[in-house]
Image 1: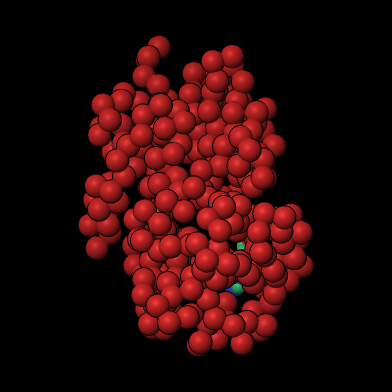
Image 2: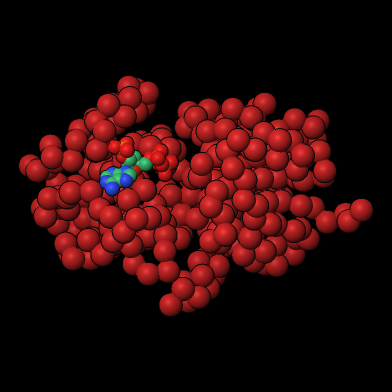
Length: 276
Ligand code: ATR
């Protein structure tokens, strides 16, 4: 049997995933020997697929849409940030055979915003569009950066209100529908809806972005997403997609698994050149 350590990302769909490429680049950069693959796993096969992966020598997994809540339920041990997010994107085999669940999405976003794009969060008014799983994972890490406030706007207001109920003790948080945003403006608007995937956009008032404000789309695409384009058309200081967050959350997972932190900037640069 091969002694090379095996890792993988599970999700559905998964064929477009950049994670195998990113982890291969990390491994080369840090001189680590490992193999990382992408596997299409439907939700109903998740538990069997994970159990079999670890039983056959797998060391760590990433889980993406629609499996993060299932991964949260699967993990015997959870980090505090995973516990709060109620979603897990990283599973790691521990020495005693137990499986640790972590969520590196939020730290990946914050590192990309502050470290790579110099978009500061402290004292800023932040708007999150969407109240699904992607929003859940980022609220707590964003609040930890002491913004003035975070508003969560969603098509289904009850889902935004539910998140406010869960996280409001950590900072100033409120919920509303898109049509209630007309009189407000924000320093940072984060698109956490899945609408970019269908080239769609929630209805956004033209003055929603404050002067010198920035836009960030959690989704990424080879071409500018419809939300990134909206930001550029509305004079955003920066309007960027989630490629950097993808690399940063992967770096955090790599560190959890291997104890070595890759240098992300050259990898992000390389992936950026590859998509044009
Ligand atoms: P994810 O895990 O990616 O967040 P999700 O849990 O299915 O996926 O959530 C998708 C989010 O995108 C939700 O906030 C959804 O709004 P609803 O809660 O009202 O369904 C939002 N969304 C998806 N398509 C949208 C669209 N075309 N316009 C506005 N919001 C949209």
